[in-house]
Image (cartoon, rainbow, N blue to C red):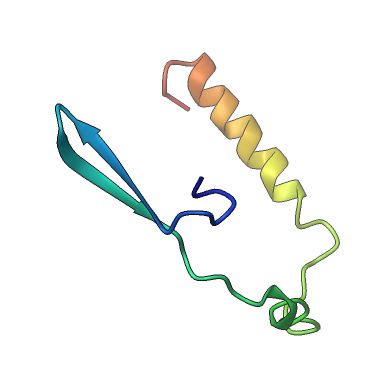
Length: 68
């Protein structure tokens, strides 16, 4: 099974012809990525309020047939 790395490749066939090949991505050491942007990215306290506004606009678009 490819999910637990017992196999390196998985071929998907249709009528005896291979149509796709699924391979594993190389494993990366995620411990080096944790905290890489610490103190470099500063978000305002209310950054999530933007999503509330967008949600309202999207809802309005659907309810009014695409017209604001």
